Image (tube, rainbow over all chains, first blue to last red; front, top):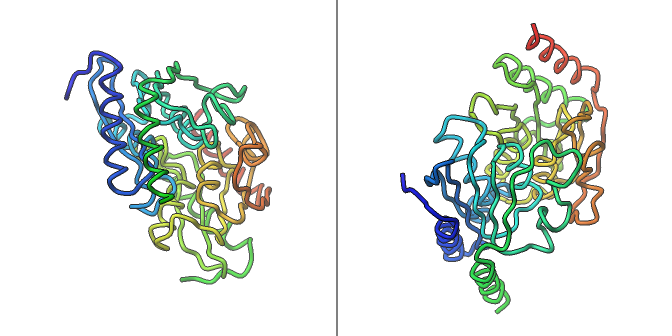
Amino acid sequence: MKTITNNNYPMEIAIKEAKKAFLKNEIPVGAVITDEKGNLIAKAFNQVETKKDPTAHAEIQAIKKATLKTKNKYLKNCNIYVTLEPCSMCASAIQNARIKRLYFGCYDEQRGAVTNGVKIFNQQYCNHKPEIYDGIRESDCNSLLKKFFKKLRT
Amino acid sequence: MKTITNNNYPMEIAIKEAKKAFLKNEIPVGAVITDEKGNLIAKAFNQVETKKDPTAHAEIQAIKKATLKTKNKYLKNCNIYVTLEPCSMCASAIQNARIKRLYFGCYDEQRGAVTNGVKIFNQQYCNHKPEIYDGIRESDCNSLLKKFFKKLRT
């Protein structure tokens, strides 16, 4: 396992995952999960189109991989790094997995559900709220998405 | 494929799925997806403990199976039958899959997100709202959950 010493590095890996999605004509979103020591335990990218699966967002797949690896349904001391603000499905999955810290890159005004939209973790019904760090490598995460949607329109 | 002519029958199958979960010491929740003609295309039960996967709720698994079968990321003309009110993760997945109708059995005051809690489909940010039919075979769905939690406490 690779040890990660700062928060910029796992987001760099998440961006590399997002680039893999881009090359497969998927909305470029990547996610990385690290354990309490900063070891990388899972990485994934959005594969909704490839898998024809509306639940195959980067975060859901990273959580599945991480719990399979740790053999624990909870990722209590783990951190998740996502290039884009999670939607309500993924924010709820992060809640269900009891992930300790959420770092995300750019904001999603349309489908985001952390600082935008339904704000899952601010709801009174929320039974677990991770520490949230937003805007990590925002510009890099965002430019990849912009490039993707520009390509889509041409 | 088995043709289903009324809404009681698919919920009966969902209850059978929930019973499978019960026998595996999982919270007994089952889900069934039918196509526009009422053909059963997927069924699943909660497997969070067995798979050690916090996303392995009945609905998520049924959606994955149905999209794999139909080779389409959307289940636009499909119906989902769930024994328990979906949580915010599953309600969002139902939204992402564009499922046409949601039928559910009993209510979940703690984690439900359809008629309880965050009410995902009533949010202004919701981009797809299925028709919702609640309280289908409520008593049968609920008694299975009550039996499970009673067993857990003894």
